[in-house]
Image (cartoon, rainbow, N blue to C red; front, top):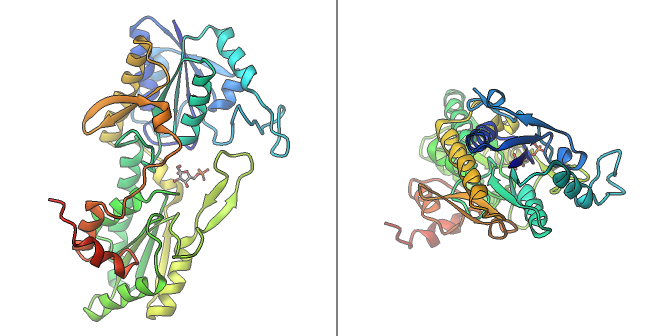
Length: 372
Ligand code: F6P
């Protein structure tokens, strides 16, 4: 048996650990492994390399992906030259399936987030034996409790919050840390809780500018002359829009966010009369070595993908529920993102220790709920 593997979407710590686990598990079963280069771009253009044990040796600790990736290559609407362009996307479905069959592959392992898994599902429905592996630092995929990369990103964001405390305290400033998280605020929420952030702003809870300012002033009244605000890039004011940095034509999700923290700094400086500074973490959160948790998760996912192939259970995505590795139909994994529930006990816990979500009304409503 020959299998193909690709990494799609943004890079993420743990991709190499999955490639290693899939490859080693496959080689032990006597299969050949082919890695497509640059995600679905390599799949469309038939650019690939054979993976041996030597190729994947020692890569468990390396960030990024040895195969390369693309977050604009979509075989169903291909905008890359020489086949298509953003104004004239090409349908490369048949060509991709032909490449797959020509190589004699028995399965394709697609490692990626919502965009990649949606494409995987389409190929599966067209008859290709596909297995999905969930990746994203945002941890926003349905059908799994965790995606690998999230724990590493959370560590980076929490360390940033920790480090900024000293400057905020020494200079009586507000320091605003902007994390990634387009539609789901998991990184900001958990880094905010773990780092003791005073205000946490998430895409799921539209903030009220006056309530954010009131939270800072309230701390000042209590003799706390500095504050830490942790804001997700997708946060937006009530009745307002997210802060879009640019749009990338041809991408499955064309908007790129960034800069909401500058709006918030300005709002706080004007409203509370305190110096406010900004740190946008950006791609720092996606780089570097994966944490032990992410390496463990990625290895379980990769080995699980090989098991699903051996059992011929295609059209599924490996996942984790609690601490058990399992799988779910790809159809259950895509389309609906896993976002932070405003009713969740962790939001309530943060409110319980005095954290503001930029909504004074939330506290009163949520504190009535009992979690334990
Ligand atoms: O989906 C992962 C993610 O890192 C998001 O948090 C972020 O909005 C986006 O990718 C950034 O994409 P790019 O690397 O293309 O700027």
